[in-house]
Amino acid sequence: MRVGKVPPELLERLVYPHLGRRPDVLVRARVGEDCAVVDFGDWVCVLTTDPITGASRHLGRIAVYVATNDLAATGAEPVALLMDVLLREGAEEEELRELMEQAGRAAAELGVEIVGGHTEVTAGLPRTLVVTTAVGRARKGAFVTSSGARPGDFLVLTKAAGLEGTAILASDFEAYFRRYLGADVVQRAQAFLEEISVLRDGRVAVRAGARAMHDATEGGVLAAAVEMATASGVGVELYVDRVPVRAETEAVCSLVDVDPLGLVSSGTLLVATPVPDRTVAALQEAGVPAAVVGKFVERGNWKVLGCRREPLEPYPVDELWRALERLERKTQEGR
Image 1: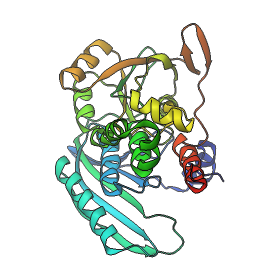
Image 2: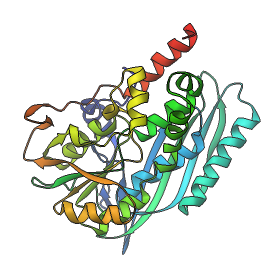
Image 3: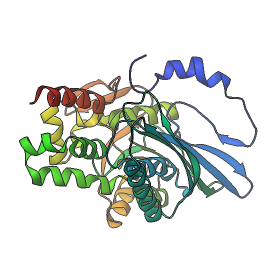
């Protein structure tokens, strides 16, 4: 199998049939759903897990944000984190210290506690990996999922596409991008890391009419839109010319010839809402940039650009991996 997410057809055939079933599980594993929801009476427990495999710098911070973003996309309150830290062979103590300091600061910012996990040095890893499980809570009936979109709902996007991927590339290959784009552009791109939490986005959107939400992680905005439509059993039209892409992201992606809409996009929340004006206004009033970028339809996934319509098909692998491969080759060649 190729690098990236396991294809949905393999999940349906090889994974989902073996998961068991309990009556107190309200939301269970399916394509497009990032969180499970378990009944605990008046409250529900919301759970999710995420690996960080494409970044080498700011690993602890990204691990906390990405895991809690899945909870935020349900409107749940993050409570606790479990972190599995798999250190590459030969890693120094300083790497572990820095990683956990980053994770601790991010957890404190979000009001969540790291309650446990596992730490080891693992043979054969090219870089240190972190897998984070996040636990949250919500009142029963007060959470949303990825699967609630209905035909006629509008698709609202917060912030901009490719924020996480831009920050990772500008941080991990800082010298390369400084050479071609200049220090100011690189510093602004690295600062996108400060925006990759969608906790505020989710809280505001739930109060302002969200029917479903999904954060754009691996595969970027393109994959997230399709995953949301698939989970909801509907189609989606994505107005690609309306998706906000910042100048720094355009510059970074142009230099390595990748599509910002297919780039890992933590910090970007997709919201299905029947009241787009109300939802966008509430987000903007809370200081979260937002725009209407599409609409849910009965069937079919489409990219719409002006009068042109073409099938919306996510890239088979996140554009971050293609960018990393090209940058590593350029670095080895001294270019």
